[in-house]
Every structure is written in structure tokens, then in C-alpha cells.
Amino acid sequence: MPTVHSLVDSHCHLADAEFDADREAVLERARAAGVARLNVVGVMDGSGRHRRALDFAAAHGLGCSAGMHPHEARLASEPDYEELAELARAGRILAIGEIGLDFHYDLSPREVQGQVLRRQIRLAHDVALPIIIHTREAEEEMLKILAEERVPARGGVVHCFTGSAEMARAALAMGLFLSFSGIVAFPRAEALRAIAREVPPDRLLIETDAPYLAPPPHRGRRNEPAFVVEVARAVAAARGVGLEEVARSTSENYARCFGL
Image (cartoon, rainbow, N blue to C red; front, top):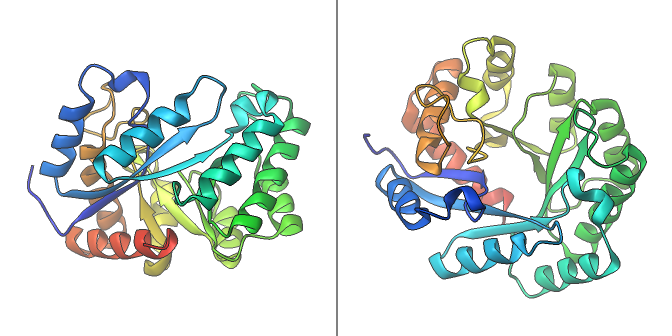
């Protein structure tokens, strides 16, 4: 796999159990593919999953974020919020997230998802960090909450963007970045590629969301950060620019988004 200007994977779950057998080799492959920066997402679900992400990121000089995912919002407790604030103030995380709303699976009650999202946005204001937003089939409610709670001064990113053109315009107007995953390379994702084509170059990010959503030609396999080069290729093709240009702009945007 040829290397290009340093790539970033702005969102991966590299500390999750799917990588227990070969995590170090996965990281080595990412480095070999030119992935210079990764954000390892720590999901606070009561299992200690986020602490594994924090420890792995710290041991390897990687970025890390933490937050209560909408799937597990029903499990959120006061100690979770307190720990999240402590991690932020200690400089151990780059962002609060991923946080948000998921009305597709409804694994937590929608009202609870909204309450937990609002609480974490307020926390991001308090600790001066950006937010990483997960939204699925909840555009209207998400935009309502973001408008009412306000995007933190440090901004944030809508990760794994799969929303409508209207959602994209609204998020960009709020100062958010849009991050595209392997979905942008799926054969039937022409509408998403059309959105990726129009995102201003200074608001564009790429990610894998590994181990999920492997892009072609890796469909059906576990996704991993090295495959972000395929996401970059798909975005570059959609925008009619070279891979190097997308690699450069997304690397610069990653640094700006997360204050590096």
C-alpha cells in the first residue's frame, strides 16, 4: 500500500475486544500505511472499556476521546460525569465523545439519550473541549439540541457522517467538522459522495470507525486504521482532487479540530 502525506484516522475503536489478538500489529500496519495520527475512542459503558482506550493511547502516543454513547445512555451515572470531567481537566482526552442520539436501534430510551447528550455538551463547555457527535435517524432532534445547548467554543465533529444535505449545511453553519467513514466508498453511496464533494476543505475529516464499516475492497472484513487510505481515496475521487490533497487537508483539520 503506497504511503502519502501523513493520514489521520480521526475515529477508531482500537482498544475494543475485536483487536485483542493483534492490536500491536494493527497499529504497525496503520503506521506503514502512512497513518500518523489516530483518535482512539473510549466508550464509557460501565465495563472499563474507556480506560483500556486511555491506557493504550497513552502508551503509544495516540489521541483519545471519551464519552457516553447513546446506546449506553441508560447506564450513565454521576460518577461517569465526574470522571469525564477529571479526564478532561487532566489533559487525558482530546474531546468529549462520541456522544449523541441513535434512534435506529433505540438501545436507550430517546428521552434519556437526549438528557445524557445535553449533559455532556454542557460538560464540554465547562472543560473547553470539542465534542464528537454520533447521530443516526435523529437529525431534527440533534439539531434542536445543538441549537439549544450551543456547540462548544472549541467546536466538534459529526463523526461517520451519513446524514442529509440539510444536516450537513446546518452542522457546517454551526462550525462543526464533518467526518466521512468507509461508507463514502460504498457503491450505492452516491448521495453521500455528493455531500463530501461540497464540504469546505477546511471542515473535512476522515475516519475508519474501526472495527466497523470496512471500505471496499475490504468489505466483509474487520476494519482497521490502515484502511483509512481507501476512505481518503473515495473522498478525493468525489472531490476531483488528488489523494495527497485530501491527506494534507484532513491532517491539518484534525490538528485544528482537536487543538494539536
